[in-house]
Amino acid sequence: MSQNYNCLKSKVLFIINPISGGKKKDSVPDLIRSNLDTTLFEPDIVFTNRAYHGRKLAQKAIGEYPYVIAVGGDGTINEIASAVAGTHTVLGIIPFGSGNGLSRFLGIPMDTAEAIKNLNGRKVEAIDAAKFNRQWFFNMAGMGFDAHIAEVFSHDKTRGFGAYIRSAFREITHYKGEHYYLDIDGAQYDREAFMLSIANSSQYGNNAHVSPKASVQDGLLDVCIIKHFPLYKFIGVSLRMFTGTADKSKYVEILRGKHIVIKRKQDGPVHLDGEPQIMGQDIEIEVVPGALRIITGKTFAGEYPIAPDGDQKQVAVNQ
Image 1 (spheres, rainbow, N blue to C red):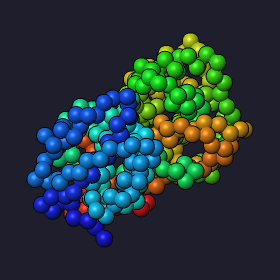
Image 2: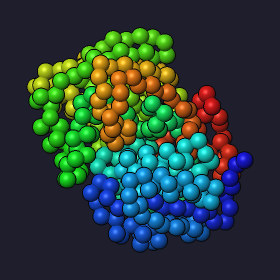
Image 3: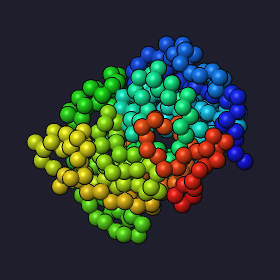
Image 4: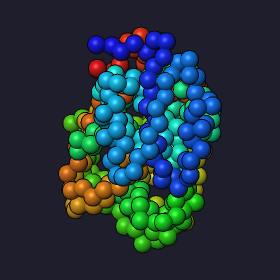
């Protein structure tokens, strides 16, 4: 049954992660009250106080709040979106992370006040999501060097993009790549890779685009194979990501598919939307088209908008 998003006022729950991105959020409640259109929304505001608290709060909100807003970075978004994916509940984002990859891709303003005002437009789209060994991700997942750095960075007391880059430069001199066996929709590949990224959107964050032509509404995932390259090429390969030309590099191979199986020789780190964990040798990934209803920025040229009454104007790919 569709929920009515065009009623006089819609209840909206803001879930704030107070530690994401290493940025203080004490002023966020006042910014919400001064920038949210209260003729459209009736806001409630809560702060998380432990790991996975955001997901539990979002799960409880389903059915009571037509809108749930994640205030944090890609990890916070993952936690909250994992609760609302596959439901009629609409996710909103106030970006507060180190990279804010999904937010940037969707055209959501980085300024907090402007991001809150963006919610007032209620520009809702259905976007794809994916499952990585049955765990949700919405922007980017992977293994190899970026997963290794995510694991290292998770133990760093200093947050932010600068700290992340310092970790990358420190680790790259002694990092060794891995061998991967891939099955993408039945086609087999055998690759040595420095890094293997599974992209739903085009970018990691901070406008670093690993797969510039990726779409969150095509029913496909981009498998980005970053091949081994000489150390002196590191800056050049990185710059290609910031100029949107990574797919032109001879060190980057991009394959697309719906169902992906990856086998590697040993257990090791992976990341889901930047959040690291250790997984085994066998990985299974599948796209779930149109799984998440989300408020996008005004500049996002989407294909699957949600009508004011909560019904999709078009049917999402393969859904």
